Every structure is written in C-alpha cells, then in structure tokens.
Amino acid sequence: LNIVVSRVSGQVLKVACAVQKSKRWFFLVYRMHPIDLNWEVVDSLGDEALILDMGITVIAKDIPGIKSNSIYFSGLDYGRNNPDHIFVFDLNTHKIETLPLCVFSSIPFSDARWFFPGFSS
Image (cartoon, rainbow, N blue to C red; front, top):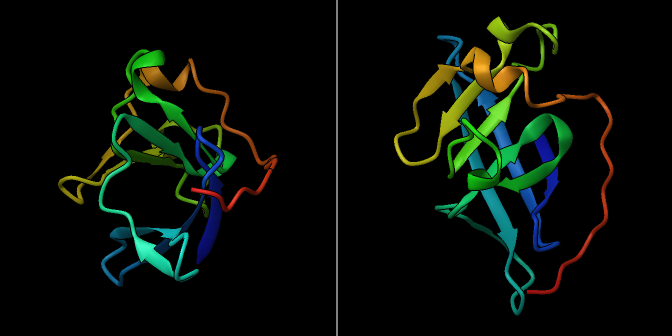
C-alpha cells in the first residue's frame, strides 16, 4: 500500500506500508529526488512526525506527546476512533507502540485527506 503525504514544507512524500504475516507493520518513506526525478528513501523526518491517516507531517515539538521521526497510523483495518487501534511507528528503531491516551485526545484523526502537491526541493 502506497500513501502520498505532504510535508510541512510542501515536499511530497510517498509512504509504502506493509503488514507482514506476523501482523507486524513496516514502513518505508520516499521523496522525489529533485534532479533525477526518482523516488529515494528518506531515513529521517527530523523534527517532524507523520500523521498517515491525514496525509500530512507536523512539527512534533508543537504538539504535546508527539514523537519526532515517527509515523502515527490507525492500523487501516480497524476503527479509526478507537485509541487501542492507533499506533506509532518509530523510524529510528522500526518498532511499533500503541498511542498513549493523552495524545489520542489531542489529535483529530480523520478519513479526510487534502493534498496540495509540490515537487520542488
């Protein structure tokens, strides 16, 4: 499954997510190389966190409880408003944890996706 995401800067990312047979999620993040126009792997989001269900990144320090360089997602096949089914994928460790309840109440996860593309660097 590939999902397109817009960064705070307007840069477009492609997020490839897969569920392994063990029900373990794995993510790869790509950006468009500005010269070659090929997708290349992004190793770090820096101080941003990716909210996959909304197709955006946010500055992690601006939202209490949000971890930088992480992907927040709903599990895609579970109820999006159930806090037991919202997870955090850490891009540093490639480990998944459930979303702390204090964070769940402050983030309006949504099925809506607004996309404003920008391929400039």
